[in-house]
Length: 320
Image (cartoon, helix red, strand yellow):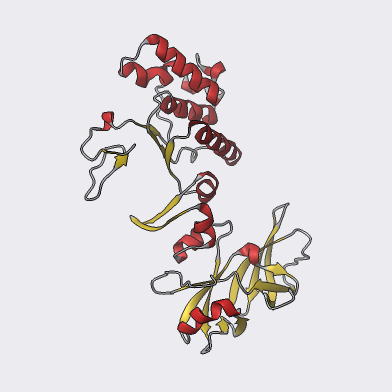
């Protein structure tokens, strides 16, 4: 719709402050970077970069200057005479980005540009795109299913589900203050854990699956009291689960059975059985996790989330 390839049913699209609802795609001054590169196989890298400018009948001197500048930014000056078949996946993606850069558009559209790359190259290209954005200062609308890409690249994230916007916010907002269970479960690796729970009459305690008791700190009790007796979903992120017994009112000590251990080098993931539920925790490598053995863990009393199990909306209030 932003590119003008689909009509909109309502609202208004503005690019650079100009309404473009009725503006033809060629006149919208945007540039697209496709998932599959969409390079011309019979043209050199230089001609692929220059193609859009030649169509617009720009002078040869200007084409040479713009292509050289884009190639320098993306470090592909040595590839200008090659054909796409002679390039690696990462190099092809740089050429695709360069073709958009030479246009000097008001906005860029990136359609999952890194999904065809392997994990290491994807990480490298994320850094390059971040640098590119900082250097150009242009608006980039970046579509991705990879939440790591979204969290690391975005100034603002729009989380969509089945065509509906669930939340718009900074990466910090999306991660730490999710407005829906889907948003909470989409961000984080591993994602947030969810357990059924019931709120006590005075709002001071949550009953988790399997009869576990979880005390609610004072700043959060008012909202819990307003939901007394309700069956809700309790959410906690893996990195907020601590091995050992935490001391003080900010920690709830529990005992869990270790079902599975996944060493990752810098840290270790463990699947835990806690009462009648299962949680994934992220721990330091020296946490002493052994599959089949119990371990003392502590949950932070002030870092949990609550969700309505029917609407999946977050239940939030003062102190959250």
